[in-house]
Image (cartoon, rainbow, N blue to C red):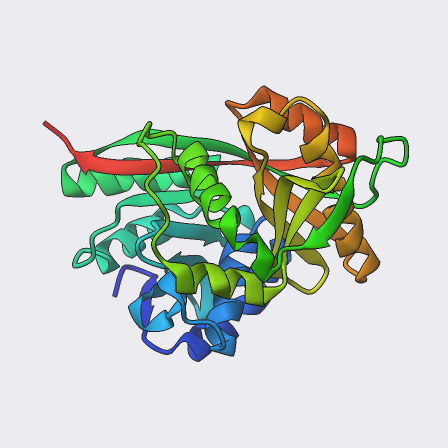
Length: 295
């Protein structure tokens, strides 16, 4: 218990879902990651990798029976935060930090103001320091630019693609982590067969050759997310990624969703320019801050 604040740790993902869903929907697009995760957990259909709620950290901070702050961590990923209606309450943040004293938080991600506010207080309380891991920008699209050149043919990833999809997936992960590691040969065949079975990953073919991919993830009430956009280096600069994302975005709109959203790395001006040409417009900036021991 904190002064005027109450920290609550949830063990039941269904209870957490019912307590937080409507509040997170105040900013549906902004909260696509958290909303998508609790929908997955509540449905209980997919428990691969990090998706099993038994390992999650779910918490809220309330004042006068009204939730002020929502926190979710799906290990190995860090903590995701949302302050109700984006109103930062320092007392609520301090209460959350006290409530998490027995948990190790590797990183935090939220809108810039919330992330830095939490990080400053969390580091001060735990003798840590933080550094910026990723600066990101969230974009939304309500209409695909009709003048964008249409290149290639889009189709769902199939079992016949298992000779290259695992390598593209691993290469994409290396691109976003930027840690300079050498890509190892993918070993988890079951995981990649599962990706194919979800029927949400698309590949763009040009003259019969796969040249780019993108995935539809986290289907919400009015919004749908695009992720895992990857084009092998040899095929870059030819408009394949633009055409792939544009076609997938149109599929989302054709399915009745009002908006398609995606996140870009602010350090990559090329991708930000490409997506704006498709019709995406910035919503907000977010930042991932990583914690380490202060010396």
